[in-house]
Image 1 (cartoon, rainbow, N blue to C red):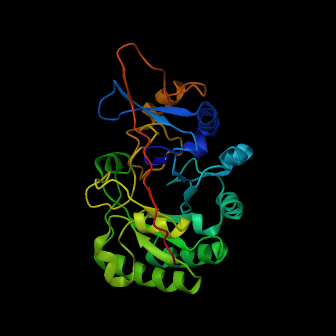
Image 2: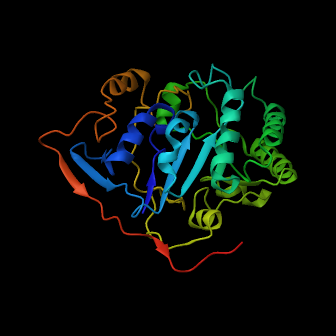
Length: 306
């Protein structure tokens, strides 16, 4: 099975010690975001985990014990944007994150790392021209370290509008200008542009079939997969099931975040974190139900070639 760590929070950035404790223990518990008393138990032994997927804005805390992951296939998506502290208040220095991405690529291989430049938002500071310049600078800096760049335009979820009240949608005309420029720039640095949940961008040369889809993972690892036919989100072809994170626990504080209700709740939840607990937040209670997840493999016998 595939174990995902980053759809609900940033485990590498804030909970690396806890994650390595779970690797050592050989299992992890994950509380359902829809039923607070339902807990899923996942086996983490490398014999039953086909792939570990990480999504982070800071991979460096994971480097200290990285050898513990040597028996796993890993796919990493690392976000690096040109925004300042007024948008992303708690992100590490961007040059430092860039260097961490290069080091990660050297450790796992460029084909196993994707760069996320998202979400794209516009205002008086972050104009279309600003994004085009910044994207080319980052493409140049990451050339050879990844061949897979993911973009998206900001979605105005209720949480996002509440935490970022002045944000506006990106117009279709601006989406076109940015998309066409990004595809041209990326191709000159041997990168392919993917978009998540942005079907209308395919006419500009962007691959909209999924940023962590079956095809993407098969090409990255030269393996065949037979994943479940259901997907985590309607309209999304990415393999995002089996997430061990928790909402309202990410400490980055980005204004555009869809996973955090507010910073007060995040602070309260993070105070309940115990790096020795099998749960990311808190502990198992007497009225909880633990469900064993069948760790069946989704690998097929068919090899995939480029």
